[in-house]
Length: 407
Image (cartoon, rainbow, N blue to C red; front, side, top):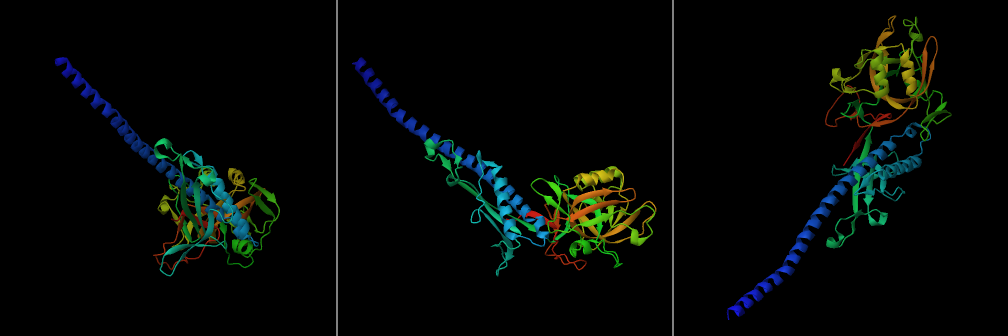
């Protein structure tokens, strides 16, 4: 009897254990499925963040392409520019990955890249208006999707039933020509030369000014920049040049013989080594400390000390910059120059240019400068809420644009 009872208890124990096995297996499956969902969800969040970063980089590259030197040409081709913008967006995107997959953008006209402008609607809201006529904004969609052949693979398809996921991100960037100043960023200097060019002169016989040679288009058109090779070539491109010349020694007091260009002091003290640094690397925040680490022209002209002598190692420094587009300054008046070439300039505007040739001689230096277009995150635009009568801050600058994401 005792043996039978023990056998009966043993049978009941085995029964309980047997019923626990499928329950434990089910619990493991549920927990595993939950963990799989959590891991895949976290993975997709990371992939989405990577895709958004890639989209932002692509749209900034595309918007930067909008700020093309072609805008300064007499025969500006909007369709050619639009094609270049779309191709640049696709190129930048393809150099990025999200979830281990290459990012894709359709660069065809009816694809993922849309050009236009930000306008204000009847309700006072900023909206994107698609147009290829003088566009200043780009909206694009970047993808990791099955239809592009690059979906984001998941870790646990056996739990979720999905081997991969589709992701799409939108990005928008704009260029704004209403620039009033520049401010270096922590990781980006202002892409500017310490160079000031004569904008206007009170003597009508002086034709070697920016206003006459560039904006009245009376300068010669002998050079062009090949963007594919990064080289300056002889030939016409529809954009005139201005020949800049330094002041000859002994001509400092003869106004009609003075030069139309200066090296200006923006935190360098006009020291050769500091000027060399600025020519190659632009302006950093220390250079502009005297001005609050930014340089603005919306409160009127700014007087800078300058030198009309450009010689020695600085000639080679400027030759190193041939083909590079950089911000330059324009001045309307210059003070009298001493025998050492020191003077001052009343800075009136920002412009941008590309050095096409450097021609030194025994008595003076000639620089051939072609106007260019620069789009930079270091540009400052006018505060629409502020009123300022010193200058017309709403006037667009055809040479300098602020580049930014505009969600």
